[in-house]
Image (cartoon, rainbow, N blue to C red; front, side, top):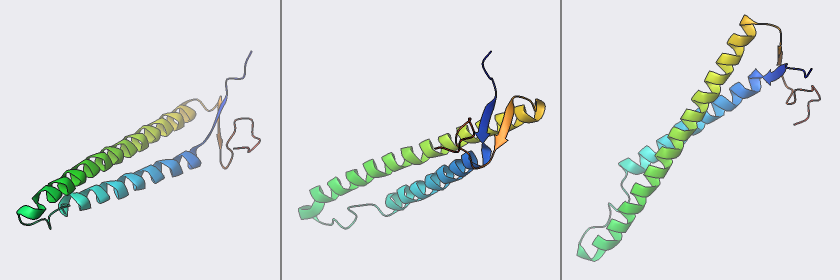
Length: 113
């Protein structure tokens, strides 16, 4: 019969969750900064109108993509956080079959990445 135990480095996954939360904050802040400091705002007058429109459109596309990436990072952090919470609850409910590890990356305990 196959060994059904699972080993999870909860601290390492928690660090990944924190990283993605910070990434979401930084990328979201960058998007908001670009949004509030509209690109092409300097384009005044008919001679710069077309160039200003291009810059504003670039800014819109950049902020849209950054906002999407910030939301994706936040969703990933949420999913990983929920997964760890489920694992920890399962571990507390049934202490057999789940071994909590710290600083190891492989279920076989070798420490190899």
